[in-house]
Amino acid sequence: MNIQRTLAMFAIPMLLVACSSENGGAGEETAPANSEMATEKAAPEAKMDPAADAAEAPAETGPSTSMTFAENAWDFGTIDEGDAVTHIFTFTNTGDNPLIIDRCKGSCGCTVPKCPKEPIAPGEEGEIEVKFNSKGKKNKQTKTVTINANTVPEQTRITISANVTPAPAADGAGK
Figure 1 (spheres, rainbow, N blue to C red):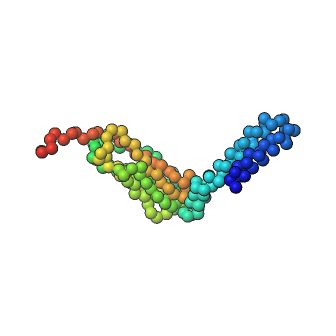
Figure 2: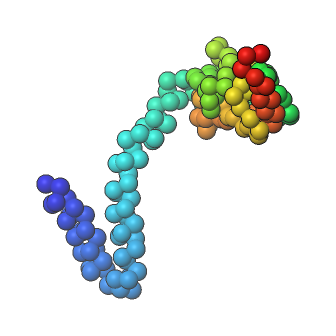
Figure 3: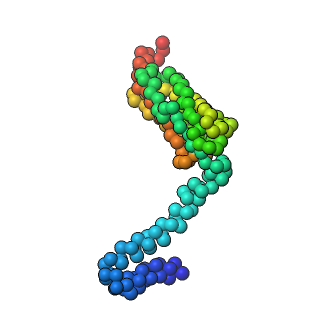
């Protein structure tokens, strides 16, 4: 059955190319026919996950809206290894519908965001608190927080960074 479909996918475009000599010959028709065939193959794969998920996401969280951050990135500057620092990112719901944040996630366990659980009305502000624990981190560190909400696009990223000064090595195990 699969062999028949594969042969049909190749045979039909070839017949179209052979029958369309009025349009300037087979050379001009081959590219579109192959492109159509590639689109047919790719379309089912695209519909299985990303397209379906994107189409369903707004239905789960309500109508789409938009959010604008006062700043998309924050640099803590130079901190010592082991320091835990916090920054609050402020955003505004710039759309016409309530903003519903579905999920906030840091790029690693050392970066922990705290996002509002209740909807943010149009025109209102909200805050996302991001804590960064530099224990075990050294030198330049850049971490992201991914926010999934009923916005277009569905994901928004904010970043934090710091230059972490390594802790001095222990001078002795018995001290």
